[in-house]
Amino acid sequence: MLNYNDILNYFNERNTNASAESFNTKIKNFRLQLRGVLNKAFFLFRLSKLFA
Image 1: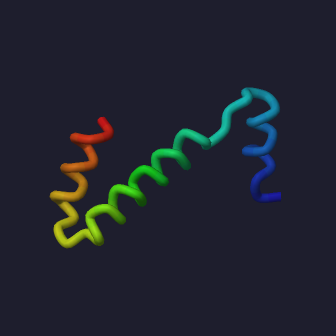
Image 2: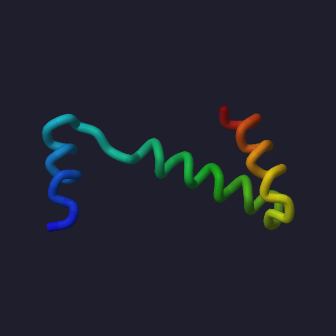
């Protein structure tokens, strides 16, 4: 089993990756609002200002 430790971690510590998945969804929605990314450095700058 490749995910054995991750599965046990949930039952032992009650930790999930829900916050990371939520943040990924916010980034995807932000990127869709901009209709793509032309300047990667500026995109990362905007993300750091909005979500930091």
